[in-house]
Length: 188
Image (cartoon, rainbow, N blue to C red):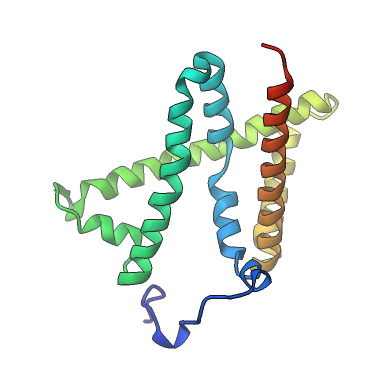
């Protein structure tokens, strides 16, 4: 059985020199970015801003700085060692439960909890759409978004998923910049 995380020296290529060549390689990164930027950032940071104002801006900035660094370092570790992130965490010192590091169990609980977040995201988006189009019930919107998600995942292959992810990240970036511009023009 072939381990997909083992680095094959024949697969190593020189980094792109031209900007257009670099743009052609951003696909997997865009899919990752699209998967990690979600309702947590949108809801938690806006709620924190509404409750604490600019005095808690350092928390948002610290999270924005540390999150990509941690993810990049885990990626580098995986490339350098051929171990997955979970295999690396399992090698850390600390208590073990059923021969597995406690941090792996904590990760499993977090992933289980994030499954509940997915349901909350569907519900939240469906409620917003119901406010925009009241004739369509929330349950119908939820089922429609679920069907669209399944169609995207089951019917299109990676290239289509990558295009949708790139569009989502670009749209999210533009909307964030526009929101920041609008906020700077709004009187206190």
